[in-house]
Picture 1: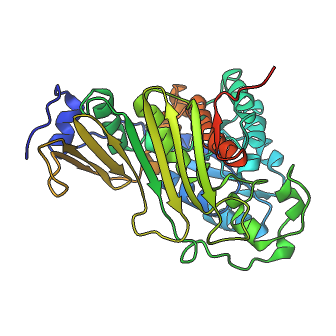
Picture 2: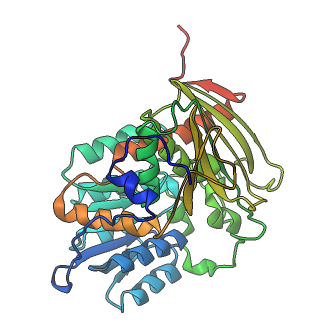
Picture 3: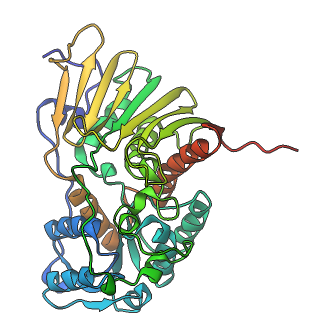
Length: 393
């Protein structure tokens, strides 16, 4: 294997030798377990609780969800300890240290702001905002409080993503004029709506501030693909990848965006299921492509530099040196050894105790969501937009 021509440091040495350092973390004991409230107890919350279980040292005290069976499942998970609530405000009134929020997007900022005002630390799923305007609201709420808010951008704690960012920022790829991102999923195979017990659902409360409309299983289950509740692929899948790009490239917003989107598969959705987007940042471009009826390649990023290319996904990364390596023989390779959500949750727990800044602060979450919102803005305005939006007069 040919060595990469960059200045060695501790981190690059660990990668090259096939080792990775685990950050030391205090493990909470049974006597000082964090008291946690759960808000929004659907599928993603189950993933967060699985990660929290791996970290240990916490107890679910209360849970809120507008669908009764979701609350019941979390209560059972807590060994019967958790109280159940339809109104999330009742969770915030409990003696708890922190809340996990994994509601639909249109509830994120309202719930997070209320939790911060109640003196609770917050783990907030991505995208942290549902609209461009909400970014300032959330940022102000965090920075005017003394609370910790961890955005659900788990790549920021995922070890091989952190290693890759170090390599990119250290100049190992040379200049990076272009980053390619992609994510394909197949909703005809996965994420198929399952019948629910509709009398056990408070649909009006689920709608919240969204326009009044009759219950729809499709909207309840695939809410990300309807504008009143989500923002499609650009605020779901793309949000993760553009966060990595903005982190690695030290630029937090595009200045020009183009987006081509179509509904070729799921005509009942409002958001496009097939997307190509291009975002221009100072000195480099980012492209994204994806669709919701093909999953052979899943998702990933390619940082294409003048000296080398780094390809990365949630399984690991490979670096290919121009003129040296082939597709089969990268000059550097690292594999993921642990789900980044676990490490991200541990970082949140650690920050609750240390009061230090988390790995994914509010500004990072807002910036990642903003890029997706701007892309959707371009989609709604003939396929392109400048940013900030230019006004006449």
